[in-house]
Amino acid sequence: MAGLGIGPEQFALFCIADPDQRARALEDTLVPGMLRLGGELASGLSRVVGTSLTPEAGRLVRRRDEPPEEVLVAFYAGERGYRSAPHLALVVSRAHLHARVAARAAADRGGGMRRALLREAHNLARKGKPFRKVRSYSGWDHEVLPELAPAHSAAFWCELADMLASPAGAGGLDVGVAWPAEEARSLAVGDVLGVFRDLAPLYKLLAAGAMAPAAHPAP
Image 1 (cartoon, one colour):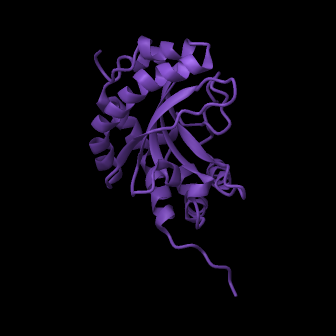
Image 2 (image 1 turned 120 degrees about the horizontal axis):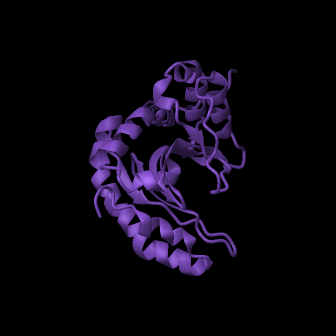
């Protein structure tokens, strides 16, 4: 298959109704394919963000009697794995391909990512075109796509910062750009890298924040 190798056959796996059958089909076919694609993208993404990134297949999320709704390959720096760091992700769901930037609240152990977002909220809001198609996937039900985010507003970026402040560590931010399945089949690696290049300022801000020392309360 030309392009990324993600086409009708891959999207059709999400139409399997039985949770166990769908999970097996995704694990046997789409997960290995996404990991291979991740290997092809890793060097280009590393150049985009200016640091070496490692691809890792995401865990299939399975809840009781509910089949997995997406498959992803994540790209992260360091050695702790993508769930412990800000990361880029290429994601396949039932009807879309997504390029996303994400970070779990538990990964912001010292609060550096949150502080970086709050500090740079106005600058991010002024970037305009690179973020014009961004959506926030936090709480997404995997049905209708989330609405386009008001990325021109500093308040939006402050809200993302607050998502990293969950005391239970269950929150986090997850934003990105979506292509419909019909368009995804004709995409090339360069098209995907171009969108991640637009998202790179957010990833680099989070990555720098993750490396910042923890703030200490004033005496």
